Image 1 (cartoon, one colour):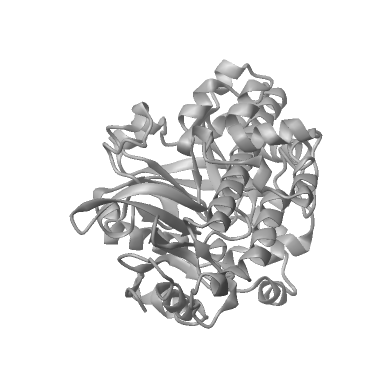
Image 2 (tube, rainbow, N blue to C red; image 1 turned 60 degrees about the horizontal axis):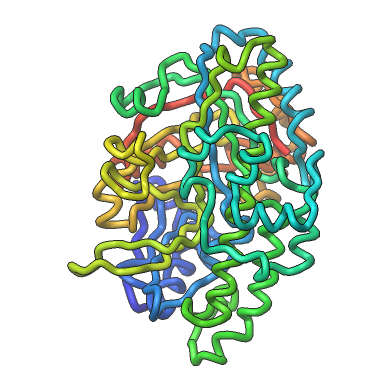
Length: 460
């Protein structure tokens, strides 16, 4: 190990983290060339492909490597939160109708395609311009862009680095939710912990919010798959000795292969920003139509949009110097503090909103970034609850139960493709999100602002 491994966890969460292969993966990541400070794991950590989900690792931009396995297959899987002018009482008795309408408007499920079919030139522009392309084509407003990580567009992308097969998969999936743990949720704000920050974010108790959780779909999956095949041959070429896990295939970040992957990955991140932007537009239009209200009355504005599967080129303080790094966050969220230059002006004096989703029937949170996160975790925190059961085990545990009925008894309306998809994502399959939030706040790497509970959820 070139650096220590560090797990942020309470006693309860630590026992869960130690019960799968995640600690061995934390160790393996610590063995990669050019890693600095620590191989980190957030309290929602669990076993993943190559590197644990809930992992953070930063590598020197010149001397270190870039690792697809510490980004993941769903590049820029992330979360967007929309605030509204509505109170939960305004939609009482209408949530089932609204979630069913959203289910009809936003395609979901494995391999789902949408009504928006891109030509090759359009796809190239999405790769280059991200959410900006969506706004320019009528899917939202410029005000949305200010409140998206990187303004919804990472400049260092290149369509030429993306395969024909990936492009084929990407032409029909923009504006679609996908499957697995992806969702669109209607929520109610139940608690405010930091009134000044909540006011800056436009949040208040009793408010209706919408949370969108999805990523780059089959487009990002294919790009990752393509480069894992390429990188399988690269370590030997550059004399890199890998830990005993070929899933951590990597390349020097400064190599032609490393630069090409980074450009392709940024393109898939832009696709994901555009995807969530199109879904935002569909959510607004559907809600306005179902409730019979104007856009001004709805007031559905983006609070923030964050990536939690990505590698970012960032500047950080390390050993008294300013260094350029490739910060890999896999199931981890950027959590920059007040005053950081990367934040939009509207949040510069408050800090970055951190959006943490729950697990169908459990709470979701808005946090804010802290100075301690910059000092300890490269400005990073958790991304959710984190799985505690495999999907197969969750289905076995669900036998004889009805998640539809259980959620209905909690007052949560559900629209889903199948009973199996609900069983795979049932709340009991995940860790206690409240405990995860207590842990990151207790560690000082993010701070609670608001808590939301679900009124209705749409699953793929």
